[in-house]
Image (cartoon, rainbow, N blue to C red; front, side, top):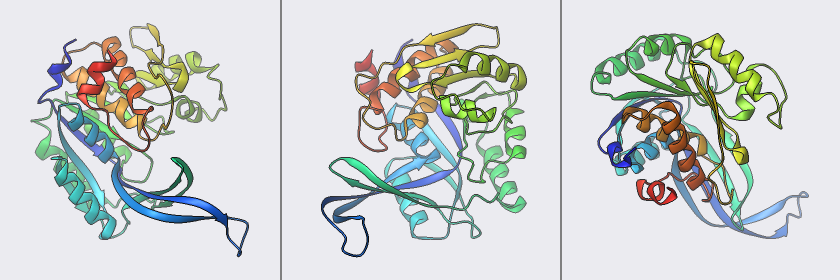
Length: 308
């Protein structure tokens, strides 16, 4: 498939919008107050995370992104809004005064993550906010070539939203967490750990993935692409075929945001006319690019082309 077909495809992204904050510094001593390291801070940076990172990947791969979701009435929300404008991501953002903006703060030293601090509320959005989200979707659905649901289980994606979205005759791709409620969509993209948690199982070596993939497909009537880290990915299609796709990563450096990249790339590929196997192969290449980078960083179309 010609990757230039990504150009101009409009993807509607609905989900958990996050701010990724990085505190960069050096560690040279221990605290006299407790047996913990002291980080001497050199700088702080902010990057789009969660559903916003998925939208950022759509832009970097040549598509157009419209992002629907909520942020809090706080400084982190203002930073996200500014970053979205800088990336030319069309935003349909709702201010939710009942929930703070989701922020993940990573403390970095010597190019390694030392600690992560999360600011979030996992309570579900109110019906009033849910209605506003649905209105935003209705206003933007006609011009969309495909829809992404980015669900980090932070309370912004409800069963009602999923049901309503799946009723549209559009390509719908879901980046899920540990919930088996995404029925009748085009594709879901869990990783190895997430599909195991859906069945309340521990299967760290991926030995049960084929069995779980087959069972989940029958249950939700959706194609499934399981990303498996260094083992690549496995595609389960509704026609019964199972395809193993070897990893394209030369070196795994940082997996932050890799799932967002997979979802963005596979959706753009499907919207551009690729079949499921072609789209999964393209997404696998995109994942191979971003895991070789430090931090939450999108894959560019130039990097994706070079990977091929």
